[in-house]
Image 1 (cartoon, rainbow, N blue to C red):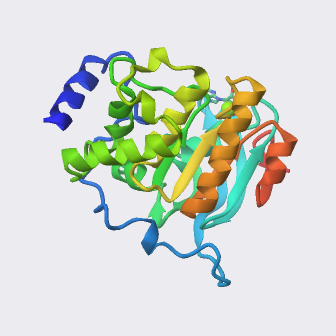
Image 2 (cartoon, helix red, strand yellow):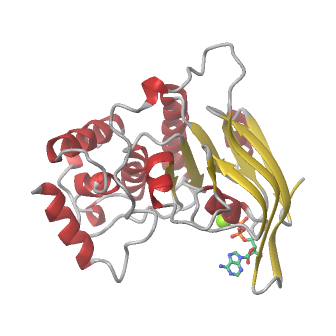
Length: 266
Ligand SMILES: Nc1ncnc2c1ncn2[C@@H]1O[C@H](COP(=O)(O)OP(=O)(O)O)[C@@H](O)[C@H]1O
Ligand SMILES: [Mg+2]
């Protein structure tokens, strides 16, 4: 019943707002039981497995006229918190989009969470299982309630209606929005909307969170709250976090900073 209602409302929006990030048309997701408790413990003093491995990644636009990424080599280990910095146009968003299979490399190898993203295939189930996206603009669906927006990534999973509602409620509680479950997004402040987007990104227990300037549209105080929340989630959930930021102090919170300049790691 619930799934059907949300799907109908989503369909009404299909032309305007629905995009790859919010709706996944893939195969059923992994079971709810396959979640964080099966993942390696961040605190264990063992070498952590590589979750991202990129070699000589090249990405161009306009038939090669624009070189957005120019030979990137990068390895990231499971559970790392990496900040990604660089001037506008340096390729940060392009790199995140390729890591999340929203875009594809021209050349090179891209392995993320055991998936070869250079293969020609549908990566929607990869996205829904492994990746949580958080963008500068939250991309919430305006005619769905806060709770329904958070449930969207679970639509294609085998999660029952009751479980979907419960998971959304729990996550929204964890981002302090328990009183806003049935509100529509336009009634929320920018910071509140971004917290909904964070809850939505976490809903399928992703192994990687890709956050592209998540505080870029917020005032600094609200931005700080969002960053603290992301840092907390990183600690608690043992999730790999890649965060694009322009703020040095944010970068200092991370385990490591990667600087991009003209499509190269500098
Ligand atoms: N869809 C696109 N079509 C053409 N050029 C693009 C496209 N997306 C990005 N670019 C170009 O690729 C380069 C890197 O862009 P981007 O990854 O968005 O940088 P950043 O996120 O660091 O600001 C820029 O020169 C940008 O203009
Ligand atoms: Mg960008």
